[in-house]
Length: 172
Image (cartoon, rainbow, N blue to C red; front, top):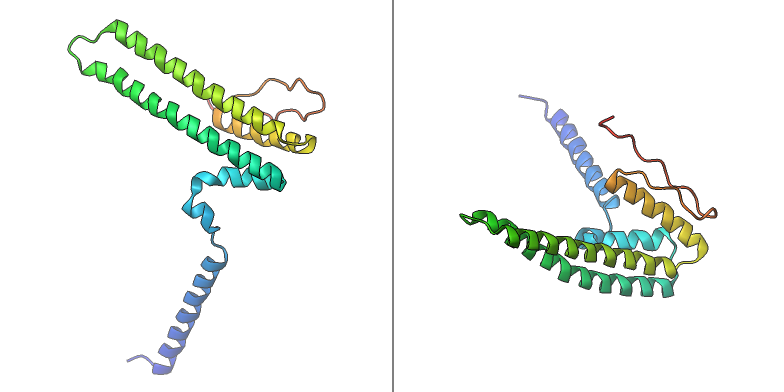
Protein backbone atom coordinates (compact mmCIF):
# COMPACT_ATOMS: atom_id res chain seq x y z
CA UNK A 1 0.00 0.00 0.00
CA UNK A 2 1.20 3.54 -0.71
CA UNK A 3 2.58 5.82 1.94
CA UNK A 4 -0.35 7.69 3.67
CA UNK A 5 1.76 10.80 4.13
CA UNK A 6 2.50 10.89 0.38
CA UNK A 7 -1.22 10.47 -0.47
CA UNK A 8 -2.16 13.33 1.85
CA UNK A 9 0.36 15.61 0.10
CA UNK A 10 -0.98 14.63 -3.36
CA UNK A 11 -4.57 15.28 -2.24
CA UNK A 12 -3.58 18.66 -0.79
CA UNK A 13 -1.84 19.62 -4.06
CA UNK A 14 -4.91 18.58 -6.11
CA UNK A 15 -7.21 20.62 -3.86
CA UNK A 16 -4.94 23.67 -4.26
CA UNK A 17 -4.92 23.21 -8.05
CA UNK A 18 -8.73 22.99 -8.12
CA UNK A 19 -9.08 26.12 -5.99
CA UNK A 20 -6.59 27.95 -8.20
CA UNK A 21 -8.47 26.92 -11.34
CA UNK A 22 -11.83 27.99 -9.91
CA UNK A 23 -10.35 31.34 -8.81
CA UNK A 24 -8.88 31.91 -12.27
CA UNK A 25 -12.21 31.15 -13.95
CA UNK A 26 -14.09 33.40 -11.50
CA UNK A 27 -11.71 36.36 -11.90
CA UNK A 28 -11.54 36.16 -15.71
CA UNK A 29 -15.21 35.55 -16.46
CA UNK A 30 -17.07 37.73 -18.94
CA UNK A 31 -19.47 40.36 -17.66
CA UNK A 32 -22.89 38.85 -17.11
CA UNK A 33 -24.69 41.20 -19.52
CA UNK A 34 -22.75 39.79 -22.48
CA UNK A 35 -23.54 36.25 -21.40
CA UNK A 36 -27.24 36.87 -20.85
CA UNK A 37 -27.80 39.27 -23.74
CA UNK A 38 -25.21 38.69 -26.49
CA UNK A 39 -27.26 40.75 -28.95
CA UNK A 40 -26.51 43.83 -26.83
CA UNK A 41 -22.74 43.35 -26.98
CA UNK A 42 -22.22 45.38 -30.20
CA UNK A 43 -24.05 48.35 -28.67
CA UNK A 44 -21.96 48.12 -25.52
CA UNK A 45 -18.81 47.84 -27.60
CA UNK A 46 -19.68 51.00 -29.57
CA UNK A 47 -20.59 52.84 -26.38
CA UNK A 48 -17.16 52.11 -24.93
CA UNK A 49 -15.10 52.44 -28.13
CA UNK A 50 -16.64 55.78 -29.09
CA UNK A 51 -16.69 57.13 -25.51
CA UNK A 52 -20.34 58.15 -25.84
CA UNK A 53 -21.61 60.82 -23.48
CA UNK A 54 -24.68 59.98 -21.37
CA UNK A 55 -26.86 62.02 -23.78
CA UNK A 56 -25.38 60.21 -26.79
CA UNK A 57 -25.89 56.86 -25.07
CA UNK A 58 -29.55 57.64 -24.53
CA UNK A 59 -29.99 58.68 -28.17
CA UNK A 60 -28.02 55.69 -29.44
CA UNK A 61 -29.95 53.08 -27.47
CA UNK A 62 -33.27 54.72 -28.40
CA UNK A 63 -32.30 54.66 -32.11
CA UNK A 64 -31.05 51.11 -31.78
CA UNK A 65 -34.32 49.93 -30.22
CA UNK A 66 -36.36 51.63 -32.95
CA UNK A 67 -34.12 50.18 -35.67
CA UNK A 68 -34.45 46.69 -34.19
CA UNK A 69 -38.26 46.95 -34.16
CA UNK A 70 -38.26 48.03 -37.82
CA UNK A 71 -35.90 45.25 -38.87
CA UNK A 72 -37.97 42.58 -37.13
CA UNK A 73 -40.98 43.40 -39.35
CA UNK A 74 -38.98 43.10 -42.57
CA UNK A 75 -37.01 40.05 -41.43
CA UNK A 76 -40.29 38.25 -40.70
CA UNK A 77 -41.55 39.28 -44.14
CA UNK A 78 -38.28 38.01 -45.64
CA UNK A 79 -38.76 34.60 -44.00
CA UNK A 80 -42.33 34.41 -45.28
CA UNK A 81 -41.35 35.40 -48.82
CA UNK A 82 -38.54 32.85 -48.91
CA UNK A 83 -40.80 30.12 -47.54
CA UNK A 84 -43.41 30.87 -50.23
CA UNK A 85 -40.69 31.08 -52.90
CA UNK A 86 -39.24 27.67 -52.10
CA UNK A 87 -42.67 26.13 -51.48
CA UNK A 88 -43.22 26.56 -55.22
CA UNK A 89 -40.72 23.73 -55.72
CA UNK A 90 -43.16 21.38 -54.00
CA UNK A 91 -45.78 21.97 -56.68
CA UNK A 92 -45.92 19.61 -59.69
CA UNK A 93 -45.89 22.55 -62.14
CA UNK A 94 -44.50 25.65 -60.38
CA UNK A 95 -45.90 28.97 -61.60
CA UNK A 96 -42.95 30.86 -63.13
CA UNK A 97 -44.82 34.17 -62.96
CA UNK A 98 -45.40 33.71 -59.22
CA UNK A 99 -41.75 32.68 -58.79
CA UNK A 100 -40.57 35.90 -60.48
CA UNK A 101 -43.03 37.96 -58.45
CA UNK A 102 -41.77 36.43 -55.20
CA UNK A 103 -38.12 36.89 -56.28
CA UNK A 104 -38.84 40.57 -56.99
CA UNK A 105 -40.59 40.91 -53.63
CA UNK A 106 -37.59 39.37 -51.86
CA UNK A 107 -35.28 41.84 -53.62
CA UNK A 108 -37.48 44.81 -52.68
CA UNK A 109 -37.67 43.62 -49.08
CA UNK A 110 -33.87 43.23 -48.93
CA UNK A 111 -33.45 46.71 -50.40
CA UNK A 112 -35.69 48.05 -47.63
CA UNK A 113 -33.68 46.22 -44.96
CA UNK A 114 -30.41 47.59 -46.33
CA UNK A 115 -31.84 51.11 -46.59
CA UNK A 116 -33.10 50.98 -42.99
CA UNK A 117 -29.68 49.83 -41.80
CA UNK A 118 -27.95 52.55 -43.80
CA UNK A 119 -30.27 55.19 -42.33
CA UNK A 120 -29.64 53.83 -38.84
CA UNK A 121 -25.87 54.17 -39.19
CA UNK A 122 -26.26 57.60 -40.76
CA UNK A 123 -28.37 58.69 -37.77
CA UNK A 124 -25.76 57.21 -35.46
CA UNK A 125 -23.02 59.14 -37.22
CA UNK A 126 -24.95 62.39 -36.85
CA UNK A 127 -24.98 62.26 -33.04
CA UNK A 128 -21.19 61.89 -32.88
CA UNK A 129 -18.57 64.62 -32.68
CA UNK A 130 -15.71 64.75 -35.25
CA UNK A 131 -13.32 62.64 -33.17
CA UNK A 132 -16.01 60.01 -32.55
CA UNK A 133 -16.94 60.03 -36.25
CA UNK A 134 -13.35 59.18 -37.20
CA UNK A 135 -13.30 56.31 -34.72
CA UNK A 136 -16.76 55.18 -35.91
CA UNK A 137 -15.53 55.11 -39.50
CA UNK A 138 -12.48 53.04 -38.53
CA UNK A 139 -14.65 50.53 -36.67
CA UNK A 140 -17.33 50.45 -39.34
CA UNK A 141 -14.97 49.80 -42.22
CA UNK A 142 -12.98 47.17 -40.33
CA UNK A 143 -16.24 45.33 -39.70
CA UNK A 144 -17.44 45.89 -43.28
CA UNK A 145 -14.23 44.52 -44.79
CA UNK A 146 -14.30 41.57 -42.40
CA UNK A 147 -17.92 40.72 -43.22
CA UNK A 148 -17.79 41.24 -46.98
CA UNK A 149 -14.07 40.60 -47.66
CA UNK A 150 -14.39 43.35 -50.23
CA UNK A 151 -12.12 46.39 -50.48
CA UNK A 152 -13.83 49.75 -50.20
CA UNK A 153 -13.34 52.71 -52.51
CA UNK A 154 -11.14 55.52 -51.19
CA UNK A 155 -12.83 57.91 -48.81
CA UNK A 156 -13.86 61.21 -50.42
CA UNK A 157 -13.21 63.22 -47.25
CA UNK A 158 -9.49 64.05 -46.95
CA UNK A 159 -9.88 64.72 -43.21
CA UNK A 160 -10.99 61.16 -42.54
CA UNK A 161 -8.46 58.32 -42.37
CA UNK A 162 -8.17 56.00 -45.38
CA UNK A 163 -9.88 52.64 -45.27
CA UNK A 164 -7.84 49.74 -43.97
CA UNK A 165 -6.53 47.44 -46.73
CA UNK A 166 -8.70 44.50 -47.63
CA UNK A 167 -7.49 41.04 -46.62
CA UNK A 168 -5.94 39.06 -49.49
CA UNK A 169 -8.37 37.09 -51.58
CA UNK A 170 -7.75 33.35 -50.99
CA UNK A 171 -8.82 32.52 -54.58
CA UNK A 172 -5.93 34.58 -56.06
